[in-house]
Amino acid sequence: MKTATVAVLKKELAHYSQPELMELCLRLARFKKENKELLTYLIFEAGNEEAYIESVKAQMDEAFADINSTSMYYVKKSVRKILSGVKKNIRYSQKKETEVELLLYFCRKLRTMKPSFTKSPILRNTFQTQLRMIRKAMEKLHEDLQYDYGVELERLES
Image 1 (cartoon, rainbow, N blue to C red):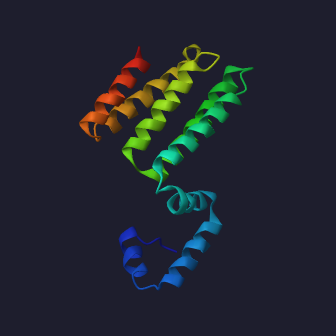
Image 2: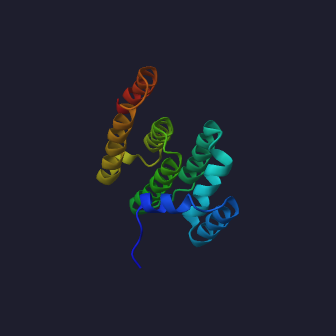
Image 3: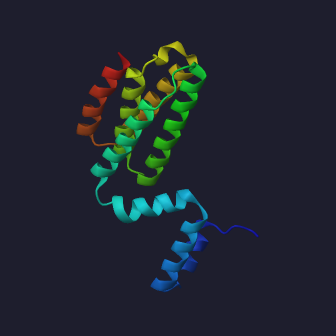
């Protein structure tokens, strides 16, 4: 089966009634956990972005607290898992402010983590990459927000 493009799907979905669209969405949610998570965000959390950011931060706090620090291997693996979860939550929101806020928080948590991330070149590179991504996302924000986040970014870099 050849997969249709988003434009073709959009045109076809215009012909469906509301109950048929609801059935399609529910059927789609059954197939993959990410689809269900995205629908949950869109239905329950998209209206209150601040609460969503706080819930993701709470998940990050819990994940950083649960890191197995017996070996640097486990620390790196855990940090990558946390970061992939953060990236997934950023994709759901698609707002640059949310992206900057969550990545700044991730970098803050990484910086204060024990054992220090500076002992591992992989974690140092991860930290630097996230700082670059923050800068890139900040370029698309309003000037006032750029300044506020820029101050925080400078604090992280020093």
